Image 1 (spheres, one colour):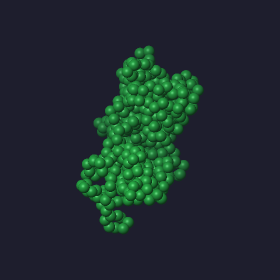
Image 2 (cartoon, helix red, strand yellow; image 1 turned 60 degrees about the vertical axis):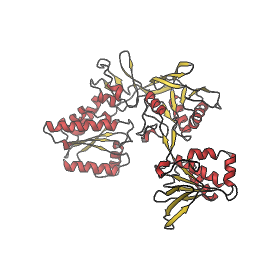
Image 3 (cartoon, one colour; image 1 turned 90 degrees about the horizontal axis):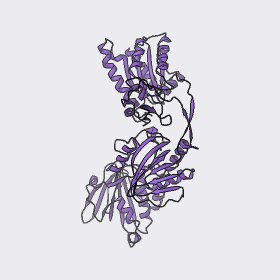
Image 4 (tube, helix red, strand yellow; image 1 turned 60 degrees about the horizontal axis):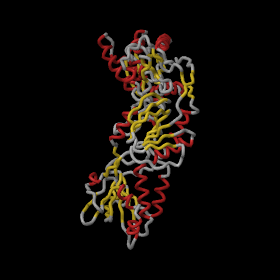
Length: 511
């Protein structure tokens, strides 16, 4: 059971660092400045002049190092003039990615007639080229997209914008060959409708188009509507592009200690990170222009007037037990741990109370304020003692997912075994060996650790730590004469009450 939490007020720096001066970086800087905060905008290249006088610009500058915590990020900014140490309360990352044409996926070589999306956008910015496209009988331009990679709204937007521009040039004609037209972003459905009304033709063949490249170009598809081959000899073919993560983005993520997804994109592919969060409180991500307002709101919510009310005991270190082994520092998914007066210290602003550090600490030197070890042990004793039927099952349920699913299952009168009891934990990563073995010692017939699905864990790696521990304990159970099947690990989402009930019933039947 969660204990009462005392609150304290912490003074935090109100300056904001924005890294990256692409469109989303500039927009975010302006939005944050409009909230009344001083902004420093840095970029490793040139920086356009911002509209707001509250934005300080540092061109050709990189973030060489980062120390400190949320509300007190201490950075070293380096450029040709030297290095300067600056402190910020929050950081906004506006990542810049490269683009690579996927012509080889279509068996094509780039030339003056087969061009990348970037090249065509540049050509459509040239008045003379646009005039040539629309003269006489006009030129035909074919856009191919979504067959070299899975499409996305950003790629769709570029294709639709370019096709609409072409179609408006007198007699020019635009054709789109798309595996899937992703219009799930603001304004894309309207843009698609505008293009169709202007005469843009969109094919969605079931297979990649067959394209011939020679003196003339030829595209052949089997149209699923008319059920026959349809051929086109366009004047230009525009091939899609993939987004490429540069070394600079990876280095920046490492410097800031923020997670990327498997392809290196920032932030990680976690539902709790969208639309503007990273795994570290106070470091926000503006991946698109649409993220800028969200970033500004998150910054204002964090910094407010420079004073933040936080839990005094979100995580507390016992200085008599800490041996500075660095375990907590390495495993904290939120970068909330630093060193102070020779022992580990945990920032009350940055800590999100997941409890992974407490469970991984070999000296039991860390306690989570709302979920101390003593409180959880008492919960275990109470849960087992309250059971009247058999089998007796103790389920450690993450409060962000499985607990909500379990509560919903009870509220909807979904069938659950009579001997089933749930214990609330801040994250499955807080469930350590001692708690699981305590449940067995108290008399539980079975123990379940219910965590978040992959990519849905608020603590990013809490489910991973919990799964490792369960696997290790299952091996130990066999050595002491207990069936390993008395302990299971499972994942569940907060809206899966029926599946939660089903998993518990199946577990009870095996016991």
